[in-house]
Length: 281
Image (cartoon, rainbow, N blue to C red; front, side):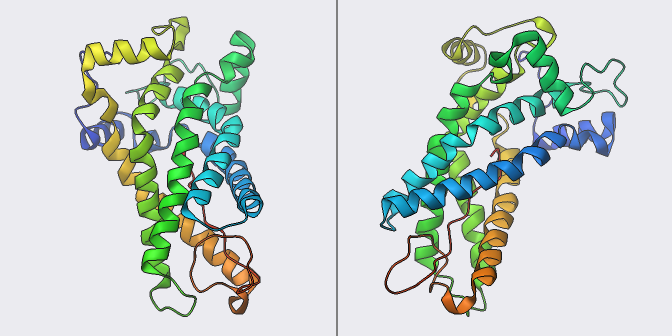
């Protein structure tokens, strides 16, 4: 797609064009990669975040940020290759109902071919920008959830507990994306670069420089609308589901008086963990 002649005018036009040109299935291109990766990503994030909070010892907003940042950093090992495969699969056959020439059969085949052609560095293309995005992004995510749940409260016997969890989770996802979205734009461009063997960018700085020169500062908000429209329901469902599962698994009578994450203390034997985003993030 030539940035001087954009393929889509906006979110709705993009949605409309994909359905018209590629059918409804076009909206789900590249879905296999996140479906395979998100299970492992969430397992890593929950485990690292919980252990980090236990190590830090005190349930404070700053510790929530640090624990989330640690979790975000470690999960990049899976997140980066997963998003690379998703990006390449989504670019394949753009605007065609039936792709005439498929370069990749599926997400695994995509990664295998990239590895064969470019080695380990090819599979981890965009790793630095992924780290720059995910580390503070997950920190903000957990911090926002902690602040919101402390503010609105969500006791187990509260009739509005589930709506509150959904609201806190959705808003945390939006806050996280807003804090790091410009980095995501650059990451996506770097991972899309090199399709067909033609490379446009030589480094992160070169990608930023070329993008700003050709499209102005608005380049850092391209696709933000569709990202935020997705972020709220996805993260709302993630936070609410995991919190409720852990609440009932551990027993309501042992749960805390609110749904925030923290290490055990003398007042409560068991506390619910903060939940994390799904995302790629």
